[in-house]
Amino acid sequence: MKRWLACLLLMLLALAQSAIAQTSNTQALHTLQRGSYRQILAAHQGKRFIVAMWSVNCTHCSADLEIFHKLAAKYPAFSLVMISTDSPDLQPEISVMLEKYKLNNATPRQGSIEQWVFADTFSERLRFEIDPHWYGELPRTYFIEGNGKVRGVSGVLEEAAIEHWVKGEE
Image 1 (spheres, rainbow, N blue to C red):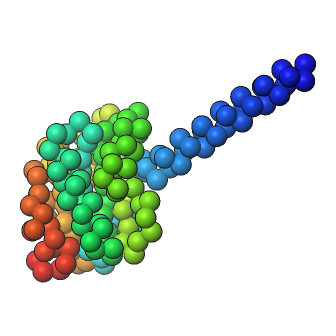
Image 2 (image 1 turned 90 degrees about the vertical axis):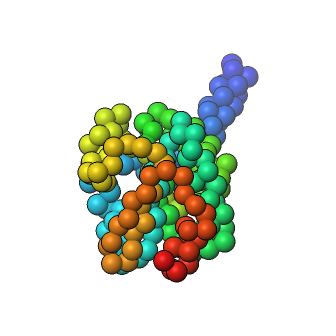
């Protein structure tokens, strides 16, 4: 009986550690719901930052993720909001991509990198709230100035142009 209890206790301990590990990998991934985008804008009010829309299934998004990785490493005050247009059930894959490109805030820095995922599969409402003129093409990037001016760009970014913007030269 004591051996059985000891085995049961070890199994429960292993399950608890596994749950803690899973939670720590995905806990920084916020769920984007109606109204969340307005909260993001309010939280960054008066600051320059980039909002990057991407997906784990987007073949061209990885090029932008690589650019953001390089810029985040080079400019520690650079603030970035990553929004995955995938459904929440893809959180493990999203976390793997963010880890691969070191965009998961694992390293303390002055700027921030926030990670969000669309809350549901009916993405049209969320896309419309972000930008009524955006029809879902990816990658999609928004350059938001401190005065609230927003410029949206669809497609793969040019690293030099983005670096100029991050440095405040554009």
